[in-house]
Image (tube, rainbow, N blue to C red; front, side):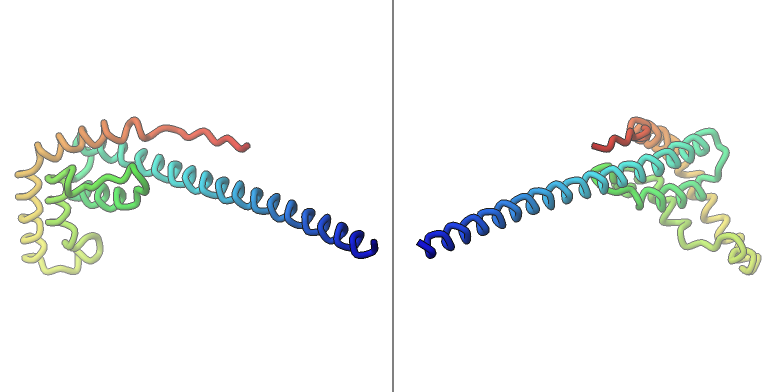
Length: 162
């Protein structure tokens, strides 16, 4: 009889531990889902900020308030930071913008530009200006397209905690 009682108590303990383990496993899975939701939300918020900046840059370029070469550098670099399904392949979708970026990305800027010899600076200016002039209309059209593409993505994200 003592053996039956001990076996029963052992079985009850094992069942209790199994139930507790199942509870902890369920809680862990729920926590993993919550972490994934938070990561997705963080990516969406970050992308929304990026698209807000892209929208502003596109508007400045369309209105002629910003140099197209400077704009191409800023847009191509900032669009590299977009994550997830909203990622935009600039080289494929916006070839004129990408071409101008490839021409000017390695040119000296700021203080580095001032250190260049006058002839080298003029050579870079000529190459940049030729490319800007040749691609001007195509880039403006691409900026309008890009602005239209990011506008629906540039929305505030409501945060709901459950």
